[in-house]
Structure formats: C-alpha cells, structure tokens
Length: 85
Image (cartoon, rainbow, N blue to C red; front, side, top):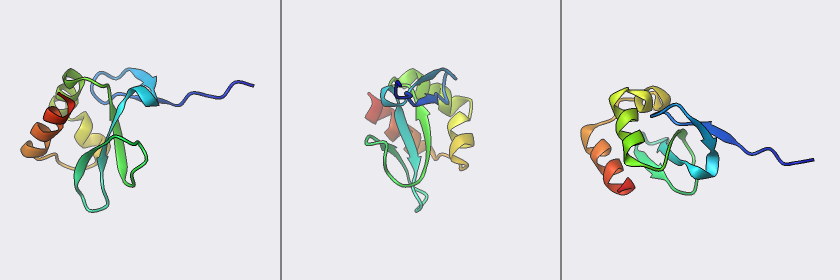
C-alpha cells in the first residue's frame, strides 16, 4: 500500500500541492506571525507556494488573514516578502 502524500492548498493561488513543496506561515500562540520552515511549530498555520507572487496574492486577497484568523500588520507582510526573496 502506498503512503498518502499530504496535500495543502495555497492561500494565494488556491492550488493544491504537496505539503513539503510549500511554506507554512504561522500564527504562534503569542499572536506573532512567522514563516515556519520546519512545518512543525506550534500554532495556526496557512500554506503558500514557495514564491513571492503567491504571498503577495495571499496578502492582497486577505487569504492569509482569513486562514490565520487575524489582521496582518504591514511590517509583518514586508518581512515575510523579504524572507521569501
């Protein structure tokens, strides 16, 4: 029996992709929004494709805010885009 590959939906473009191909944006229990590179950190996560266009879309269409259930401050958006490159 083949092991099931976990799929996640990008909050930017809406495409379903393998979990390991994507980046997890995380809202920690302390209400801090960070990029979770391990995919294992504690908190509420939203997934985006590994490119800055999808991050920009997710911020513009409020997909990230909806998934994380909180408002995303401007400086956090800028920091996330810098980290993605």
